[in-house]
Length: 147
Image 1 (cartoon, rainbow, N blue to C red):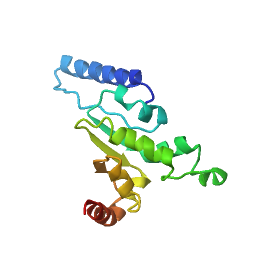
Image 2 (tube, rainbow, N blue to C red):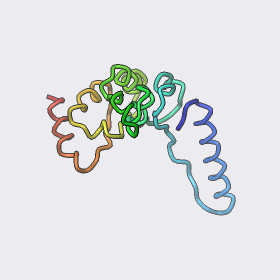
Image 3 (cartoon, one colour):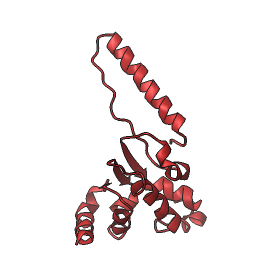
Image 4 (cartoon, rainbow, N blue to C red):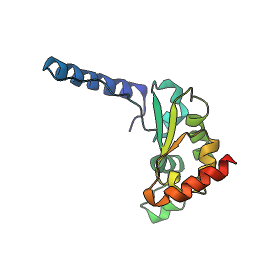
C-alpha cells in the first residue's frame, strides 16, 4: 500500500534500475506507466501530491480504513459502509478534483454493486473493475445513470 509520494518515487526508481540492468544485458526493456492504488485515506486526501497517469481506488481497503471496520471481525463489520459520507467524499477527492484527463477507476466489491454505481459515477469515476457475475447488472446501472 502506498501512503506517501516517496514510496511511489522509490518504486519508479527500482523499476528504472531493473530496466537499465536488462538493457545493459541486451534485453529490450521499457518502463510501463506507474500508478498507485488508493487504499488509505492519506492518499485520497492528498492525491494531487502523487504524479501518476491513472488512479485505481481499492474500495474494500479504503472503506475499511475510513470506517475503522473489519469485514472479518463480526463486532466491527457493521461499521463497514460503502455509503459512509466520508468514504464517498474521499472517492470524489480522487475522481472529481484532480482528474485532469486521468483514468480514475474503482475495484473492489463497491464496483460490482449496481446500487452503488450512481454514487461512483457522480464522484467522477471513469472505469469500474467488475466481477464477471455482476457485469450485466452494472452495465444496466451505468446505462440508467446516463439517461
